Amino acid sequence: MPVSPDMAEDLAAAVSSLYEQAELALIERITGALAAGLDSPLWAELKLAAVGNLRTAIEEIIAVLQADAAGAIHQAVADAYERGQQAAIAELGALATGPALAAAEALPAAAAVDRLAAALVQETGPAHLRMLRTGLDVYRQVIAEASSAPLLGAQTRRQAAARALAKFADKGVTGFVDRRSRGWNLTSYVEMATRSAVGRAAVQAHTDRLAAAGVELVVVSDAPEECDRCKPWEGRILRREGPSGAGVVEMEHATEDGRTVRVRVAGSLPEARAAGLLHPNCRHSVSIYLPGLTRPRPKPPSRASYEQTQQQRYFERQVRAWKRRAAAAVDDTARRQATARAREYQGRIRELVAQTGLPRKSHREQIGAAR
Image 1: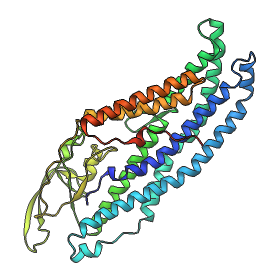
Image 2 (image 1 turned 120 degrees about the horizontal axis):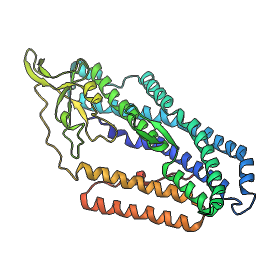
Image 3 (image 1 turned 90 degrees about the vertical axis):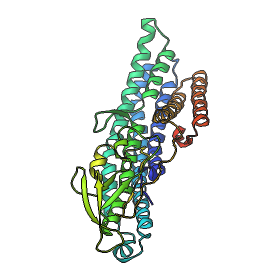
Image 4 (image 1 turned 180 degrees about the vertical axis):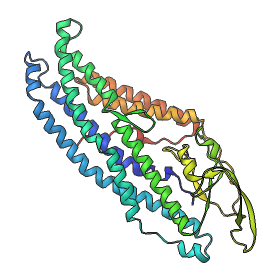
């Protein structure tokens, strides 16, 4: 059975949902604290005096998040690793002889899972401090903007507060930078990091199991709706590990003793992954390659272009953004308008999936209820 990061997508969603819930709780807590008594002439003084209460409330949100996220991360990585192992066992079971048969059993996974989970916990750890800092900064910024607006004659205090909170809801908790120097907000960053980690766990488990069976080569699928980073590797044969670079190698036939076959190898799996193969959202998979036996598989028909799949992702982000805007609304009118915009983008998603046949992934349109 081929292995792909996509096989662990639902596991990543379980983790990123916790952070989205926490971010929503943060937005709602700040909005509620600022909206109370907004028309009072002493509003700014009262709000600044209550900043300690807000800090305590945010710290409570973070404490719950930390406790939940650590367990969820470990479980997601463990489940992904198990899926990768089972995928390899299914492939090795087709051989059912000699070393392959002996190796077609689950390897002890605790050490590998603990290592991968610890790396993800460390990577997402700064998010918790960032939530506290951003929450307090936004709270003070809204107070400053809402207090100065009437003096400038440009807006009422309520309008200024609503504008500042809407800006925060649009951006969320920001300031996260990945290895490619791209900026992310909290939920998107955690989702990206978790999808990378669980996808990596599934692929590593698969290759660990193949290594135990003495399998040296894997083959990349030819997937529809591919991106430019993955396209050069489609249908290529790769070394499971080892040196980079293409070449022709002599390999023993998978089932015929004493017979060798020539195999054109495009490089190594680590080389291909470093170039972008098997990135989060990648539709490609890798599977066992048996010299002399494995034959190329036909490419599945494309349901849509790569650009259309990215358009769907954009619409999903807009749905979530407008739902966050509704959570940050200081009055019912603004809340209804934001909800209407969210539904508008959901309508665009329905039209796109009906036109292309792409699957609708409703969980990508949801934000969790604040706890």
